[in-house]
Image 1 (cartoon, one colour):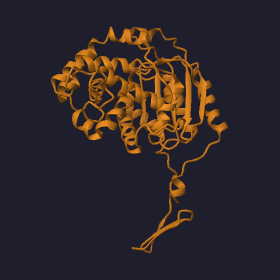
Image 2 (cartoon, one colour):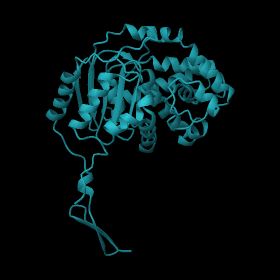
Image 3 (cartoon, rainbow, N blue to C red):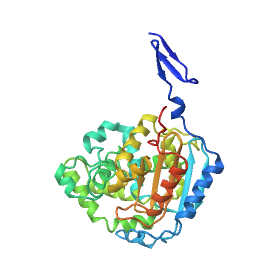
Length: 343
């Protein structure tokens, strides 16, 4: 079979049949550091005075976070870091942690183990729905709603709690490229008010999705949600996924490119709670939010972005963080669905 590729020209020839070469159309558009920084600065200036939404209060300590805090950070796959606003403010990961615990489980056990045990589809129900567990007997939960997330945490392998936690915080550290710690005050506040998650854990145990000790799984899940990060940490974690699982700053291979692809696919379908579809229409980017006010988004092969602001919309997603990431995505032409037609 004759095969001729002319990637620098206008045609690709296979068995003497010529096809239009679209490789140039698919190449990543390059932006200067000044253009990237300008996009962040503009997003910060445009949305810093937005007062829409309110802090989460069902975890009492989250309601005490100053609601006007707002920071954005972007890390490119070649390791350059850009920031605007309150990027050094620590806050709890909350549901963003689900992404990286899923990465650990896929790394250890493969995607099929997750698909078989809890599923990867969007549920169409709220993130802490008990009715959805009953409807599907613990299946079709996906790792980013609480029943699936607690079950995912229970799937991390280890002979005791300490070994399991060491793996979880270890992979978080590798994604961030720095040592992260638990915000003890958040953990205590959340542990004192997580009776619904305890019930969810026991119900998932009853249906066999959690194999042993649902209370331990729920407690570890609560602790992972309480890990402290800032916007720069989140951007580095997102950039590691954007870079095929290798941290672009430390150059450590955290997971494989295929595993990163699996994680980003689940993010695309279920990353922003009930508004995941709306988000994908607006930006085209895999993303994950947390009720602590953080949002991460990934432009595969280009950059990861982390944004933080405590005011949430009704779905539980940071208002300013969403607006800022959408603005930067448009400014940098990062939506993968925004394709110029081939003439």
